[in-house]
View (cartoon, helix red, strand yellow):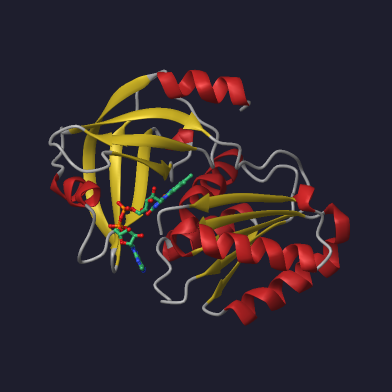
Length: 235
Ligand SMILES: Cc1cc2nc3c(=O)[nH]c(=O)nc-3n(C[C@H](O)[C@H](O)[C@H](O)COP(=O)(O)OP(=O)(O)OC[C@H]3O[C@@H](n4cnc5c(N)ncnc54)[C@H](O)[C@@H]3O)c2cc1C
């Protein structure tokens, strides 16, 4: 989506009703909301979500939509610590039928062509990437694109791991689970060596991690134009 489409969709606010919530892993929670018929998004995009059932400090925050449109629901997955922000405390209070507001979708973190693609998720950065691989699963990896996912989680909790393994089988996506930057760097070097300038790189996660992985890619002669970043500020 372009800048003007993003601007337009930012003005449109809609209410989303909670269907269910669940604990995804330690300190990670998922919220599933009903999807309006006219709401569509590109896997990898995000929305701005506003708490409306009570007054909270900073009531609006960006979250990636972790579902593909074919799933017919808006899925948010977020890290929630033992001492969460007012926003996240309010999220945990939501009961089915209660609503939040959403504007968007916006963002340009999406696969666009058939290039060999390396998806790199740092921790909670798995959210936009889950949406992307779910979409590939539902469409079928028809063009036999080479898609590889490197999933780095120093806590080794890997939210969505079981589901990702099933998708990987069905959609011919190779997934490597890693708990160290050294391991990640070694996999990046292998992929970059095999695909040279034709490879595209998609990096999602907390901003510090995304920036440092992008720096590493560039140090390894990956052109900046082949790197797409989805940096979660706020962590
Ligand atoms: C495009 C985009 C997409 C995003 N998508 C997601 C997503 O899918 N899921 C998601 O969880 N977040 C996502 N974020 C980040 C999200 O918007 C919040 O900024 C983030 O979750 C922090 O939320 P919070 O401030 O409510 O606080 P909390 O997480 O409750 O944190 C409260 C305070 O503690 C600090 N803090 C939190 N964790 C730590 C830590 N480990 N060490 C030190 N300090 C810490 C925070 O900086 C904050 O000041 C996205 C951000 C962007 C820009």
